[in-house]
Amino acid sequence: MLTQKQLGFRRSDASPPNITLYSSTSRDWEKIRYDLLALLPSQSTLERLGEANSCWWLVRAQCFKDYEKSLLSSSRVALSDFHPAMTAKALLWVAICLQQLPRGFDVDSLELGCSPNGLIAKCINIVAMSISSDETLIMNIDGLECLVLQGIFYNNDGKLRSAWLSYRRALNVAQIIGLHRLAPEAAQDSESTSRARHIWNHIIYADRYLSLMLGMYHGITDVALDSQCGLSEKPNTSMDLLCCIAGSIIERNQRLTQVTPAMVRITQTIDSELLSIDTPPLAGDSTISTSGKSVERAQSYNELMTQLWHYQLLAWLHLPLLLESGAQRRYDYSRQSCLEASRHMITCYISIRQLTADSFCCKSLDFQAFTAAVTLMINLLGPKGRPRSSSDDWLAVEGVMAILEKLAEGQPPDKVATRGLVVLQTLKDVARGNKPTQIGAPEGLSTDDKEPGRIKIDIPYFGTISLVCGMRSDPSEQQEPDNVPPHPLLFDTGIAVNTAPSSQMGIIPELSTTQVQFTDIVHWPETRLEIGPNDIWTFGTGLAASPPFLPDFGDDWDLGF
Image 1 (cartoon, rainbow, N blue to C red):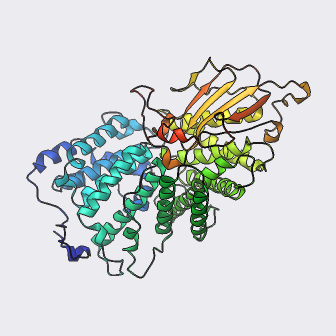
Image 2: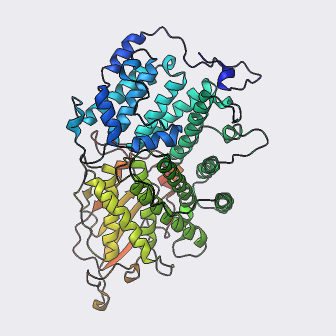
Image 3: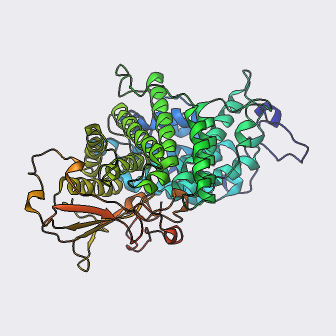
Protein backbone atom coordinates (compact mmCIF):
# COMPACT_ATOMS: atom_id res chain seq x y z
CA MET A 1 0.00 0.00 0.00
CA LEU A 2 1.48 3.34 -1.08
CA THR A 3 1.30 6.50 0.96
CA GLN A 4 0.59 10.00 -0.30
CA LYS A 5 4.25 10.89 0.07
CA GLN A 6 5.33 7.92 -2.04
CA LEU A 7 2.84 8.88 -4.75
CA GLY A 8 4.02 12.49 -4.72
CA PHE A 9 0.73 14.10 -3.69
CA ARG A 10 0.66 17.57 -2.15
CA ARG A 11 -1.42 18.22 0.91
CA SER A 12 -3.60 21.26 1.19
CA ASP A 13 -4.87 23.02 4.27
CA ALA A 14 -8.11 21.13 3.88
CA SER A 15 -8.50 17.62 5.21
CA PRO A 16 -6.67 15.37 2.76
CA PRO A 17 -8.55 12.54 1.07
CA ASN A 18 -7.73 8.95 1.87
CA ILE A 19 -5.34 8.29 -1.00
CA THR A 20 -4.27 4.67 -1.33
CA LEU A 21 -3.55 2.33 -4.17
CA TYR A 22 -6.49 0.18 -3.14
CA SER A 23 -9.27 0.80 -0.68
CA SER A 24 -10.62 -1.78 1.71
CA THR A 25 -13.88 -3.41 0.79
CA SER A 26 -16.29 -5.95 2.15
CA ARG A 27 -17.25 -7.15 -1.30
CA ASP A 28 -16.61 -10.74 -2.32
CA TRP A 29 -13.53 -10.23 -4.46
CA GLU A 30 -13.25 -13.95 -5.20
CA LYS A 31 -16.67 -14.05 -6.85
CA ILE A 32 -15.95 -10.93 -8.91
CA ARG A 33 -12.56 -12.25 -10.00
CA TYR A 34 -14.09 -15.60 -10.93
CA ASP A 35 -16.71 -13.96 -13.15
CA LEU A 36 -14.12 -11.75 -14.83
CA LEU A 37 -11.58 -14.52 -15.38
CA ALA A 38 -14.27 -16.72 -16.92
CA LEU A 39 -14.32 -14.37 -19.92
CA LEU A 40 -10.55 -14.04 -20.28
CA PRO A 41 -9.24 -16.09 -23.24
CA SER A 42 -6.49 -18.66 -22.80
CA GLN A 43 -2.87 -17.56 -22.52
CA SER A 44 -2.05 -18.78 -26.04
CA THR A 45 -5.03 -16.87 -27.45
CA LEU A 46 -3.96 -13.73 -25.60
CA GLU A 47 -0.51 -13.99 -27.14
CA ARG A 48 -1.89 -14.45 -30.67
CA LEU A 49 -4.33 -11.61 -30.13
CA GLY A 50 -1.57 -9.27 -29.01
CA GLU A 51 0.41 -10.00 -32.18
CA ALA A 52 -2.55 -9.81 -34.56
CA ASN A 53 -2.50 -6.02 -34.60
CA SER A 54 -0.41 -3.25 -33.09
CA CYS A 55 -2.97 -0.42 -33.14
CA TRP A 56 -4.03 -1.23 -29.58
CA TRP A 57 -0.39 -0.76 -28.59
CA LEU A 58 -0.25 2.68 -30.25
CA VAL A 59 -3.28 3.67 -28.16
CA ARG A 60 -1.56 2.38 -25.00
CA ALA A 61 1.61 4.31 -25.77
CA GLN A 62 -0.27 7.53 -26.54
CA CYS A 63 -2.68 7.51 -23.61
CA PHE A 64 -0.58 5.96 -20.85
CA LYS A 65 3.03 6.41 -22.05
CA ASP A 66 3.27 2.66 -21.52
CA TYR A 67 5.44 0.81 -24.04
CA GLU A 68 4.86 -2.70 -22.67
CA LYS A 69 4.54 -4.83 -25.82
CA SER A 70 2.63 -7.73 -24.30
CA LEU A 71 -1.13 -7.38 -24.33
CA LEU A 72 -1.24 -8.18 -20.61
CA SER A 73 1.62 -7.38 -18.26
CA SER A 74 0.62 -10.29 -16.02
CA SER A 75 -0.24 -13.87 -16.87
CA ARG A 76 -3.75 -15.19 -16.71
CA VAL A 77 -2.84 -17.27 -13.66
CA ALA A 78 -1.35 -14.30 -11.79
CA LEU A 79 -4.50 -12.25 -12.32
CA SER A 80 -6.44 -14.66 -10.12
CA ASP A 81 -4.65 -13.19 -7.08
CA PHE A 82 -4.85 -9.51 -8.04
CA HIS A 83 -7.35 -6.79 -7.29
CA PRO A 84 -10.54 -7.19 -9.39
CA ALA A 85 -9.85 -3.84 -11.08
CA MET A 86 -6.65 -5.28 -12.57
CA THR A 87 -8.56 -8.26 -13.94
CA ALA A 88 -11.20 -5.92 -15.34
CA LYS A 89 -8.48 -3.83 -16.95
CA ALA A 90 -7.14 -6.96 -18.64
CA LEU A 91 -10.60 -7.70 -20.05
CA LEU A 92 -10.91 -4.17 -21.41
CA TRP A 93 -7.57 -4.47 -23.18
CA VAL A 94 -8.84 -7.69 -24.74
CA ALA A 95 -11.97 -5.85 -25.91
CA ILE A 96 -9.92 -2.99 -27.40
CA CYS A 97 -7.58 -5.46 -29.09
CA LEU A 98 -10.53 -7.33 -30.62
CA GLN A 99 -11.96 -3.99 -31.72
CA GLN A 100 -8.72 -3.30 -33.60
CA LEU A 101 -8.48 -6.64 -35.44
CA PRO A 102 -7.60 -6.00 -39.09
CA ARG A 103 -10.12 -6.78 -41.80
CA GLY A 104 -9.81 -10.30 -43.12
CA PHE A 105 -8.14 -11.62 -39.98
CA ASP A 106 -8.69 -15.34 -39.34
CA VAL A 107 -10.87 -15.04 -36.26
CA ASP A 108 -11.25 -18.82 -35.98
CA SER A 109 -7.54 -19.11 -35.19
CA LEU A 110 -8.17 -17.33 -31.88
CA GLU A 111 -10.54 -20.07 -30.67
CA LEU A 112 -12.64 -17.59 -28.73
CA GLY A 113 -15.71 -19.77 -28.39
CA CYS A 114 -17.93 -16.94 -29.66
CA SER A 115 -17.80 -14.09 -32.14
CA PRO A 116 -15.38 -11.22 -31.42
CA ASN A 117 -18.30 -8.79 -31.14
CA GLY A 118 -20.03 -11.15 -28.73
CA LEU A 119 -16.97 -11.36 -26.49
CA ILE A 120 -16.46 -7.60 -26.68
CA ALA A 121 -20.02 -6.99 -25.51
CA LYS A 122 -19.63 -9.43 -22.63
CA CYS A 123 -16.35 -7.83 -21.51
CA ILE A 124 -17.72 -4.29 -21.63
CA ASN A 125 -20.94 -5.21 -19.86
CA ILE A 126 -19.42 -7.20 -17.00
CA VAL A 127 -16.83 -4.50 -16.25
CA ALA A 128 -19.54 -1.82 -16.30
CA MET A 129 -21.77 -3.82 -13.96
CA SER A 130 -19.24 -5.24 -11.51
CA ILE A 131 -16.40 -2.69 -11.41
CA SER A 132 -17.22 0.73 -12.84
CA SER A 133 -20.48 1.05 -10.92
CA ASP A 134 -18.87 0.18 -7.57
CA GLU A 135 -17.02 3.10 -6.02
CA THR A 136 -15.21 0.78 -3.59
CA LEU A 137 -13.49 -0.90 -6.55
CA ILE A 138 -12.58 2.10 -8.69
CA MET A 139 -11.10 4.39 -6.04
CA ASN A 140 -7.57 3.41 -7.06
CA ILE A 141 -5.28 3.82 -10.05
CA ASP A 142 -6.29 0.53 -11.69
CA GLY A 143 -9.98 1.32 -11.23
CA LEU A 144 -9.36 4.73 -12.76
CA GLU A 145 -7.67 3.09 -15.74
CA CYS A 146 -10.76 0.91 -16.19
CA LEU A 147 -12.88 4.04 -16.63
CA VAL A 148 -10.34 5.47 -19.07
CA LEU A 149 -10.23 2.25 -21.10
CA GLN A 150 -14.00 2.26 -21.29
CA GLY A 151 -13.83 5.81 -22.62
CA ILE A 152 -11.22 4.80 -25.20
CA PHE A 153 -13.34 1.88 -26.36
CA TYR A 154 -16.50 3.98 -26.69
CA ASN A 155 -14.64 6.76 -28.50
CA ASN A 156 -13.21 4.30 -31.02
CA ASP A 157 -16.69 2.84 -31.47
CA GLY A 158 -18.22 6.25 -32.16
CA LYS A 159 -20.24 6.35 -28.94
CA LEU A 160 -19.04 9.76 -27.85
CA ARG A 161 -21.70 10.33 -25.22
CA SER A 162 -20.78 7.07 -23.48
CA ALA A 163 -17.10 8.00 -23.79
CA TRP A 164 -17.80 11.44 -22.32
CA LEU A 165 -19.64 9.89 -19.36
CA SER A 166 -16.78 7.45 -18.70
CA TYR A 167 -14.17 10.20 -18.78
CA ARG A 168 -16.28 12.56 -16.68
CA ARG A 169 -16.62 9.84 -14.04
CA ALA A 170 -12.88 9.25 -14.28
CA LEU A 171 -12.29 12.99 -13.78
CA ASN A 172 -14.35 12.96 -10.60
CA VAL A 173 -12.77 9.78 -9.23
CA ALA A 174 -9.29 11.13 -9.98
CA GLN A 175 -10.01 14.19 -7.84
CA ILE A 176 -11.43 12.09 -5.03
CA ILE A 177 -8.20 10.09 -4.82
CA GLY A 178 -6.15 13.27 -5.08
CA LEU A 179 -4.59 13.28 -8.55
CA HIS A 180 -5.41 16.98 -8.94
CA ARG A 181 -2.90 17.69 -6.16
CA LEU A 182 0.08 15.95 -7.71
CA ALA A 183 3.29 17.88 -7.15
CA PRO A 184 4.92 19.51 -10.20
CA GLU A 185 6.77 17.01 -12.35
CA ALA A 186 10.28 16.25 -11.14
CA ALA A 187 13.12 14.09 -12.37
CA GLN A 188 12.94 11.94 -9.25
CA ASP A 189 9.27 11.05 -9.74
CA SER A 190 8.52 7.47 -8.81
CA GLU A 191 6.99 5.09 -11.33
CA SER A 192 3.66 5.31 -9.51
CA THR A 193 3.69 9.11 -9.58
CA SER A 194 4.54 9.21 -13.29
CA ARG A 195 1.77 6.73 -14.00
CA ALA A 196 -0.75 8.81 -12.05
CA ARG A 197 0.39 12.00 -13.80
CA HIS A 198 -0.01 10.51 -17.29
CA ILE A 199 -3.50 9.25 -16.46
CA TRP A 200 -4.54 12.61 -15.01
CA ASN A 201 -3.31 14.55 -18.03
CA HIS A 202 -4.94 12.14 -20.45
CA ILE A 203 -8.29 12.44 -18.66
CA ILE A 204 -8.18 16.25 -18.92
CA TYR A 205 -7.26 16.13 -22.62
CA ALA A 206 -10.00 13.62 -23.41
CA ASP A 207 -12.60 15.59 -21.47
CA ARG A 208 -11.83 18.75 -23.48
CA TYR A 209 -11.87 16.82 -26.76
CA LEU A 210 -15.19 15.11 -26.13
CA SER A 211 -16.80 18.19 -24.58
CA LEU A 212 -16.01 20.22 -27.69
CA MET A 213 -17.30 17.46 -29.97
CA LEU A 214 -20.55 17.13 -28.04
CA GLY A 215 -21.18 20.76 -27.15
CA MET A 216 -20.76 20.24 -23.40
CA TYR A 217 -18.97 22.32 -20.80
CA HIS A 218 -15.53 20.98 -19.95
CA GLY A 219 -15.20 19.40 -16.54
CA ILE A 220 -12.24 21.22 -14.97
CA THR A 221 -10.51 24.58 -15.33
CA ASP A 222 -7.08 25.33 -16.77
CA VAL A 223 -5.76 25.57 -13.20
CA ALA A 224 -5.56 21.77 -13.27
CA LEU A 225 -2.91 22.08 -15.97
CA ASP A 226 -1.15 25.03 -14.36
CA SER A 227 -0.73 23.13 -11.09
CA GLN A 228 1.37 20.51 -12.85
CA CYS A 229 3.94 23.13 -13.85
CA GLY A 230 4.42 25.05 -10.64
CA LEU A 231 3.03 28.40 -9.59
CA SER A 232 5.28 30.56 -11.78
CA GLU A 233 5.11 28.50 -14.97
CA LYS A 234 2.62 28.12 -17.77
CA PRO A 235 1.67 24.87 -19.49
CA ASN A 236 4.53 24.22 -21.88
CA THR A 237 3.61 21.08 -23.81
CA SER A 238 1.69 21.35 -27.04
CA MET A 239 -1.15 19.25 -25.68
CA ASP A 240 -1.45 21.41 -22.56
CA LEU A 241 -1.65 24.55 -24.68
CA LEU A 242 -4.13 23.00 -27.11
CA CYS A 243 -6.18 21.82 -24.17
CA CYS A 244 -6.42 25.38 -22.83
CA ILE A 245 -7.44 26.68 -26.26
CA ALA A 246 -10.09 23.97 -26.58
CA GLY A 247 -11.49 25.23 -23.29
CA SER A 248 -11.61 28.79 -24.67
CA ILE A 249 -13.50 27.63 -27.77
CA ILE A 250 -15.95 25.68 -25.62
CA GLU A 251 -16.59 28.74 -23.45
CA ARG A 252 -17.07 30.96 -26.51
CA ASN A 253 -19.58 28.53 -28.00
CA GLN A 254 -21.48 28.24 -24.73
CA ARG A 255 -21.71 32.01 -24.29
CA LEU A 256 -22.53 33.03 -27.85
CA THR A 257 -25.10 31.35 -30.06
CA GLN A 258 -24.83 33.74 -33.00
CA VAL A 259 -22.07 35.55 -34.85
CA THR A 260 -21.76 38.94 -33.19
CA PRO A 261 -18.94 41.49 -32.87
CA ALA A 262 -18.20 39.95 -29.47
CA MET A 263 -17.82 36.50 -31.03
CA VAL A 264 -15.54 37.90 -33.71
CA ARG A 265 -13.30 39.57 -31.11
CA ILE A 266 -13.09 36.40 -29.01
CA THR A 267 -12.37 34.34 -32.12
CA GLN A 268 -9.53 36.67 -33.10
CA THR A 269 -8.00 36.40 -29.63
CA ILE A 270 -8.16 32.61 -29.60
CA ASP A 271 -6.82 32.50 -33.17
CA SER A 272 -3.78 34.52 -32.12
CA GLU A 273 -3.09 32.14 -29.24
CA LEU A 274 -3.52 29.09 -31.44
CA LEU A 275 -1.21 30.38 -34.15
CA SER A 276 1.51 31.03 -31.57
CA ILE A 277 1.88 27.28 -31.06
CA ASP A 278 4.51 25.73 -33.28
CA THR A 279 3.48 22.60 -35.16
CA PRO A 280 5.83 20.05 -36.73
CA PRO A 281 5.91 19.71 -40.53
CA LEU A 282 2.94 17.84 -41.96
CA ALA A 283 5.05 15.53 -44.10
CA GLY A 284 5.15 12.05 -42.60
CA ASP A 285 8.32 10.02 -42.19
CA SER A 286 8.23 7.36 -44.89
CA THR A 287 11.06 5.46 -43.21
CA ILE A 288 8.89 4.49 -40.24
CA SER A 289 7.36 1.04 -40.52
CA THR A 290 3.57 0.87 -40.73
CA SER A 291 3.53 -2.23 -38.54
CA GLY A 292 5.18 -3.40 -35.36
CA LYS A 293 5.63 -1.86 -31.94
CA SER A 294 8.50 0.56 -32.27
CA VAL A 295 8.94 3.68 -30.17
CA GLU A 296 9.50 5.69 -33.37
CA ARG A 297 6.13 4.57 -34.75
CA ALA A 298 4.40 5.43 -31.48
CA GLN A 299 5.99 8.88 -31.45
CA SER A 300 4.98 9.51 -35.06
CA TYR A 301 1.41 8.45 -34.27
CA ASN A 302 1.30 10.76 -31.27
CA GLU A 303 2.65 13.70 -33.30
CA LEU A 304 0.08 13.16 -36.04
CA MET A 305 -2.74 13.00 -33.51
CA THR A 306 -1.51 16.23 -31.90
CA GLN A 307 -1.32 17.94 -35.30
CA LEU A 308 -4.82 16.75 -36.17
CA TRP A 309 -6.15 18.14 -32.88
CA HIS A 310 -4.37 21.45 -33.56
CA TYR A 311 -5.94 21.86 -36.99
CA GLN A 312 -9.35 20.66 -35.84
CA LEU A 313 -9.35 23.39 -33.19
CA LEU A 314 -8.41 25.95 -35.82
CA ALA A 315 -11.11 24.73 -38.21
CA TRP A 316 -13.86 24.57 -35.60
CA LEU A 317 -12.82 27.93 -34.17
CA HIS A 318 -13.55 29.60 -37.51
CA LEU A 319 -16.38 27.34 -38.72
CA PRO A 320 -19.23 29.57 -37.41
CA LEU A 321 -17.78 32.56 -39.27
CA LEU A 322 -17.26 30.50 -42.43
CA LEU A 323 -20.92 29.49 -42.34
CA GLU A 324 -21.85 33.15 -41.86
CA SER A 325 -19.66 34.49 -44.65
CA GLY A 326 -21.65 33.61 -47.78
CA ALA A 327 -20.48 35.69 -50.72
CA GLN A 328 -19.34 38.50 -48.42
CA ARG A 329 -15.66 39.21 -47.81
CA ARG A 330 -16.26 40.35 -44.25
CA TYR A 331 -15.21 37.05 -42.70
CA ASP A 332 -12.84 36.02 -45.47
CA TYR A 333 -9.94 35.50 -43.07
CA SER A 334 -11.96 33.03 -41.02
CA ARG A 335 -13.13 31.28 -44.16
CA GLN A 336 -9.60 30.88 -45.46
CA SER A 337 -8.32 29.78 -42.04
CA CYS A 338 -11.07 27.18 -41.70
CA LEU A 339 -10.45 25.82 -45.20
CA GLU A 340 -6.68 25.65 -44.78
CA ALA A 341 -7.05 23.90 -41.42
CA SER A 342 -9.51 21.43 -42.97
CA ARG A 343 -6.98 20.60 -45.68
CA HIS A 344 -4.34 19.96 -43.04
CA MET A 345 -6.79 17.80 -41.07
CA ILE A 346 -7.26 15.57 -44.10
CA THR A 347 -3.50 15.37 -44.64
CA CYS A 348 -3.04 14.26 -41.02
CA TYR A 349 -5.92 11.80 -41.30
CA ILE A 350 -4.52 10.13 -44.41
CA SER A 351 -1.06 9.95 -42.78
CA ILE A 352 -2.55 8.31 -39.67
CA ARG A 353 -4.38 5.80 -41.84
CA GLN A 354 -1.15 5.01 -43.67
CA LEU A 355 0.84 4.69 -40.44
CA THR A 356 -1.72 2.24 -39.05
CA ALA A 357 -1.92 0.30 -42.32
CA ASP A 358 -5.60 1.27 -42.65
CA SER A 359 -6.51 -1.13 -39.83
CA PHE A 360 -7.12 1.38 -37.04
CA CYS A 361 -10.71 1.43 -35.77
CA CYS A 362 -11.61 4.91 -34.53
CA LYS A 363 -14.95 6.26 -35.69
CA SER A 364 -14.43 9.65 -34.08
CA LEU A 365 -11.24 10.00 -36.14
CA ASP A 366 -13.19 9.20 -39.31
CA PHE A 367 -15.82 11.74 -38.31
CA GLN A 368 -13.17 14.44 -37.89
CA ALA A 369 -11.98 13.81 -41.44
CA PHE A 370 -15.57 13.76 -42.66
CA THR A 371 -16.26 17.22 -41.20
CA ALA A 372 -13.12 18.55 -42.88
CA ALA A 373 -14.23 17.12 -46.23
CA VAL A 374 -17.73 18.59 -45.83
CA THR A 375 -16.18 21.99 -45.12
CA LEU A 376 -14.23 21.83 -48.38
CA MET A 377 -17.30 20.66 -50.29
CA ILE A 378 -19.43 23.50 -48.93
CA ASN A 379 -16.81 25.94 -50.17
CA LEU A 380 -16.63 24.24 -53.56
CA LEU A 381 -20.40 24.57 -53.89
CA GLY A 382 -20.44 28.08 -52.46
CA PRO A 383 -22.02 31.25 -53.82
CA LYS A 384 -20.77 33.06 -56.88
CA GLY A 385 -18.31 35.85 -56.34
CA ARG A 386 -16.32 33.96 -53.74
CA PRO A 387 -12.75 32.79 -54.37
CA ARG A 388 -12.65 29.10 -55.21
CA SER A 389 -10.36 26.39 -54.00
CA SER A 390 -7.78 24.60 -56.07
CA SER A 391 -8.24 21.18 -57.63
CA ASP A 392 -6.29 19.80 -54.68
CA ASP A 393 -9.45 20.16 -52.60
CA TRP A 394 -11.19 17.67 -54.85
CA LEU A 395 -8.29 15.27 -54.42
CA ALA A 396 -8.45 15.71 -50.64
CA VAL A 397 -12.18 14.99 -50.54
CA GLU A 398 -11.76 11.96 -52.78
CA GLY A 399 -8.96 10.72 -50.54
CA VAL A 400 -11.31 10.77 -47.55
CA MET A 401 -14.04 9.11 -49.61
CA ALA A 402 -11.69 6.31 -50.67
CA ILE A 403 -10.89 5.51 -47.04
CA LEU A 404 -14.54 5.70 -45.97
CA GLU A 405 -15.52 3.42 -48.85
CA LYS A 406 -13.01 0.82 -47.73
CA LEU A 407 -14.31 1.02 -44.17
CA ALA A 408 -17.93 0.82 -45.35
CA GLU A 409 -17.16 -2.41 -47.20
CA GLY A 410 -15.93 -4.13 -44.05
CA GLN A 411 -17.84 -6.72 -42.07
CA PRO A 412 -19.83 -5.65 -40.25
CA PRO A 413 -20.23 -2.43 -42.27
CA ASP A 414 -19.10 0.75 -40.55
CA LYS A 415 -22.18 2.96 -40.07
CA VAL A 416 -20.20 6.17 -39.67
CA ALA A 417 -18.17 5.51 -42.81
CA THR A 418 -21.27 4.48 -44.76
CA ARG A 419 -23.27 7.58 -43.90
CA GLY A 420 -20.31 9.88 -44.34
CA LEU A 421 -19.68 8.38 -47.76
CA VAL A 422 -23.34 8.90 -48.73
CA VAL A 423 -23.18 12.59 -47.82
CA LEU A 424 -19.90 13.25 -49.63
CA GLN A 425 -20.97 11.30 -52.71
CA THR A 426 -24.23 13.26 -52.79
CA LEU A 427 -22.41 16.60 -52.62
CA LYS A 428 -19.93 15.43 -55.23
CA ASP A 429 -22.71 14.36 -57.61
CA VAL A 430 -24.41 17.71 -57.18
CA ALA A 431 -21.16 19.50 -57.94
CA ARG A 432 -20.88 17.51 -61.17
CA GLY A 433 -24.45 18.40 -62.08
CA ASN A 434 -25.59 14.78 -61.84
CA LYS A 435 -28.45 13.16 -60.03
CA PRO A 436 -27.10 11.96 -56.66
CA THR A 437 -26.59 8.23 -56.39
CA GLN A 438 -27.91 6.33 -53.41
CA ILE A 439 -25.07 4.24 -52.05
CA GLY A 440 -26.63 1.16 -50.55
CA ALA A 441 -29.49 3.22 -49.06
CA PRO A 442 -28.52 2.60 -45.42
CA GLU A 443 -31.03 2.90 -42.62
CA GLY A 444 -32.31 6.40 -42.00
CA LEU A 445 -32.36 7.49 -45.65
CA SER A 446 -35.80 8.38 -46.95
CA THR A 447 -37.45 9.95 -49.96
CA ASP A 448 -39.62 13.03 -49.56
CA ASP A 449 -42.22 12.98 -52.32
CA LYS A 450 -43.79 16.20 -51.03
CA GLU A 451 -40.82 18.34 -52.07
CA PRO A 452 -39.60 17.27 -55.51
CA GLY A 453 -36.24 18.66 -56.49
CA ARG A 454 -34.90 18.91 -52.97
CA ILE A 455 -32.29 16.92 -51.07
CA LYS A 456 -32.04 17.40 -47.34
CA ILE A 457 -28.87 16.47 -45.47
CA ASP A 458 -28.54 16.72 -41.69
CA ILE A 459 -24.93 16.91 -40.56
CA PRO A 460 -23.67 17.51 -37.01
CA TYR A 461 -21.99 20.95 -36.61
CA PHE A 462 -23.28 22.13 -40.00
CA GLY A 463 -27.03 21.88 -39.56
CA THR A 464 -29.50 20.98 -42.29
CA ILE A 465 -28.31 21.43 -45.86
CA SER A 466 -31.04 21.52 -48.50
CA LEU A 467 -30.07 21.17 -52.14
CA VAL A 468 -32.76 22.71 -54.32
CA CYS A 469 -32.53 21.81 -57.98
CA GLY A 470 -34.27 23.35 -60.98
CA MET A 471 -34.08 23.59 -64.78
CA ARG A 472 -32.22 26.20 -66.81
CA SER A 473 -34.27 27.90 -69.49
CA ASP A 474 -31.28 28.55 -71.75
CA PRO A 475 -30.15 25.33 -73.51
CA SER A 476 -26.67 26.78 -73.92
CA GLU A 477 -26.29 26.65 -70.16
CA GLN A 478 -26.96 22.92 -69.90
CA GLN A 479 -24.46 20.84 -68.00
CA GLU A 480 -21.17 19.65 -69.40
CA PRO A 481 -20.64 15.96 -70.28
CA ASP A 482 -19.90 13.61 -67.40
CA ASN A 483 -16.30 13.12 -68.51
CA VAL A 484 -15.48 16.75 -67.77
CA PRO A 485 -13.66 17.06 -64.43
CA PRO A 486 -15.84 18.57 -61.73
CA HIS A 487 -15.44 22.29 -61.38
CA PRO A 488 -17.63 24.37 -59.09
CA LEU A 489 -17.64 27.36 -61.44
CA LEU A 490 -19.78 25.40 -63.92
CA PHE A 491 -22.84 25.82 -61.73
CA ASP A 492 -24.96 28.64 -60.46
CA THR A 493 -24.74 27.81 -56.80
CA GLY A 494 -26.01 29.53 -53.72
CA ILE A 495 -25.79 28.18 -50.20
CA ALA A 496 -27.58 28.75 -46.96
CA VAL A 497 -27.22 26.77 -43.78
CA ASN A 498 -29.36 26.37 -40.69
CA THR A 499 -26.65 25.92 -38.14
CA ALA A 500 -25.33 26.81 -34.73
CA PRO A 501 -21.90 26.62 -33.12
CA SER A 502 -21.01 23.05 -32.27
CA SER A 503 -21.53 23.48 -28.56
CA GLN A 504 -25.02 24.81 -29.19
CA MET A 505 -26.13 21.65 -30.97
CA GLY A 506 -27.40 20.39 -27.65
CA ILE A 507 -28.17 16.70 -27.82
CA ILE A 508 -26.82 15.29 -31.05
CA PRO A 509 -26.81 11.67 -32.08
CA GLU A 510 -24.33 8.90 -32.50
CA LEU A 511 -21.83 9.47 -35.28
CA SER A 512 -23.70 6.87 -37.29
CA THR A 513 -26.93 8.87 -37.60
CA THR A 514 -26.06 11.39 -40.30
CA GLN A 515 -28.98 11.15 -42.69
CA VAL A 516 -29.71 12.11 -46.26
CA GLN A 517 -33.17 12.49 -47.74
CA PHE A 518 -33.32 11.91 -51.49
CA THR A 519 -36.00 13.01 -53.91
CA ASP A 520 -36.79 11.53 -57.32
CA ILE A 521 -35.29 14.08 -59.69
CA VAL A 522 -34.80 13.51 -63.40
CA HIS A 523 -32.66 16.50 -64.42
CA TRP A 524 -30.01 18.37 -62.42
CA PRO A 525 -28.64 21.03 -64.75
CA GLU A 526 -28.82 23.83 -62.20
CA THR A 527 -28.12 23.52 -58.52
CA ARG A 528 -28.43 25.91 -55.66
CA LEU A 529 -27.98 25.06 -52.01
CA GLU A 530 -30.17 26.78 -49.50
CA ILE A 531 -31.21 26.47 -45.93
CA GLY A 532 -34.24 28.29 -44.71
CA PRO A 533 -36.00 31.35 -46.12
CA ASN A 534 -33.61 33.91 -44.63
CA ASP A 535 -30.25 35.26 -45.68
CA ILE A 536 -27.55 33.06 -47.12
CA TRP A 537 -25.43 31.25 -44.52
CA THR A 538 -27.48 32.26 -41.52
CA PHE A 539 -27.69 30.67 -38.12
CA GLY A 540 -31.04 29.14 -37.27
CA THR A 541 -31.61 30.29 -33.71
CA GLY A 542 -34.23 27.63 -33.15
CA LEU A 543 -31.73 24.97 -34.11
CA ALA A 544 -29.79 25.41 -30.91
CA ALA A 545 -32.83 24.37 -28.90
CA SER A 546 -34.16 21.85 -31.39
CA PRO A 547 -31.25 20.19 -33.21
CA PRO A 548 -32.03 18.25 -36.39
CA PHE A 549 -30.53 15.05 -35.02
CA LEU A 550 -33.42 13.67 -33.01
CA PRO A 551 -33.54 9.99 -32.00
CA ASP A 552 -36.55 9.03 -34.07
CA PHE A 553 -35.21 6.18 -36.16
CA GLY A 554 -36.02 3.25 -33.90
CA ASP A 555 -34.36 1.27 -31.14
CA ASP A 556 -32.14 -0.65 -33.56
CA TRP A 557 -30.16 2.50 -34.26
CA ASP A 558 -27.04 3.29 -32.28
CA LEU A 559 -28.26 6.75 -31.40
CA GLY A 560 -26.67 9.64 -29.62
CA PHE A 561 -23.01 10.53 -29.77
